[in-house]
Image (tube, rainbow, N blue to C red; front, side):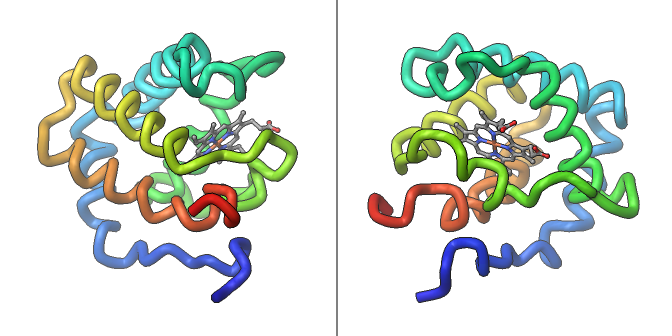
Length: 139
Ligand code: HEM
């Protein structure tokens, strides 16, 4: 059983599809609008909101923007923390928290007019990070 920081998601299959999503949502500005809305919803949510107490969600959105821009092939590199390192100071993220995040992501993407197929691919991509983010003792 690898340590959670050893987890390497398989990105190769989804990369061309993620590139297409970036174009479909209107590039950097479209992605930013989605992520700002997404993190504002996360902070207001009854199940996962407490994780964001004291955090500026626009700043988190900007870091996620850098991360996803790399994953979607729009920028050559990402210099922030990898997802498995970014949450180590937070309370344990349990499977239900992770599931809730994916539902909020789905709802946000739908409200921004993202197609059902692009939502499926985006959610599948984010799901690959589950083993590195969900607290090991609870998964
Ligand atoms: C329920 C699940 C999650 C919760 C509650 C959560 C919460 C947070 C919070 C509060 C921060 C700010 C931490 C800080 O600045 O010290 C953060 C940062 C971040 N998260 Fe998450 N997150 C979750 C899942 C994910 C997933 C699935 C990804 C990637 C696909 C991700 C990627 C990131 C990145 C890239 C950062 C910024 C790293 C940096 O500081 O450079 N998170 N997250």
